Image (tube, rainbow, N blue to C red; front, top):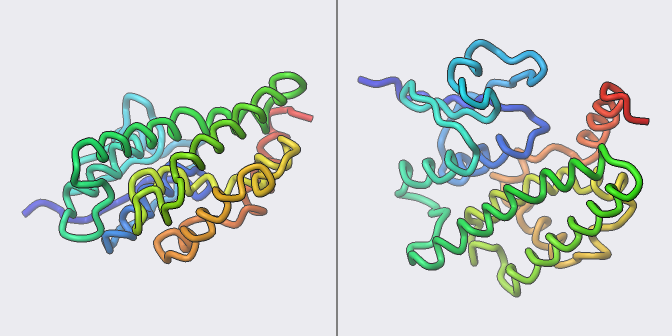
Amino acid sequence: MADERVVLLGSWVSPFPMRVKIALGEKGIEYESREEDVSNKSPLLLITNPVHKKIPVLIHKGKPLCESLIIVQYIDEVWNDKSPLLPSDPYHRAQARFWADFVDKKIHYIGRRLWTGTGEDQAAARKELIECFKLLEAELGERTYFGGENIGLVDITLVPFYSWFYVFETFGNFSVGAECPKLVRWAKRCMEKESVAKVLPDQNRVYDFIVERRKKLGIA
């Protein structure tokens, strides 16, 4: 019989493994979490993700899966008897994938420009990030979650960045709450769920990590 263990290779500070942890939590799946040092990658990480050599990697039945959105959707398909993360309607499912892809391609990279950039590029990144957040607010509308009454793929994709809001605000010199209050209220609703609250690190801890990271990168 195949090894049924679920193992996740990740890092506490990265929003991408957080997505996988939330999805597993929503499904009630027990797993082993292995912390990776991304500056000194383990042999297991290099073997299981030889193409990108990045976290997260989910190992299920001895087989590795890479890329957080692919992993989350795999979890939804394999453990499909509880807490669906995608709508049953094909159109709404496609829309959820669109917005999850939007978050995946925008928020992390624009946010990184905020805490690594200077001058005009940093100002441009702040403007772009606020615009992205406002688009997401409009998509959320008056719903409790992007997934409706329960969190779904888009919520799981976006909410890990709540831990990074203080980083974005400090280095971008703006307030997410002032610019996008609906988004902050949504994030706080998500934090009321155990699957989210036990995964997301404190914003100040993430900020301290980034301060040290900036020093290592030689950023004043």
